[in-house]
Image (cartoon, rainbow, N blue to C red; front, side):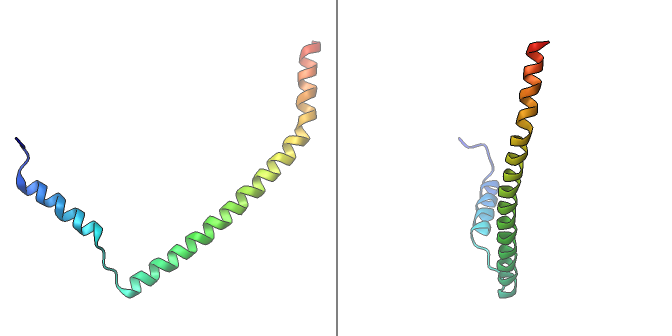
Length: 78
């Protein structure tokens, strides 16, 4: 037996149907497409920035390497 009232079940079904079908005006649809384009541009820029940041980190990690090796060497000699 189901203890939930029938009205609660019907309400959930109505919400699901409302989520499935969303009619936007032409103006709203155009604005959403423009926002999507802007977001895509930002995503592309962030991807490029991430790649450049990685290159810079790798460059400076290589420059730090002798100092880390020197630190390790000194810790063994002490």
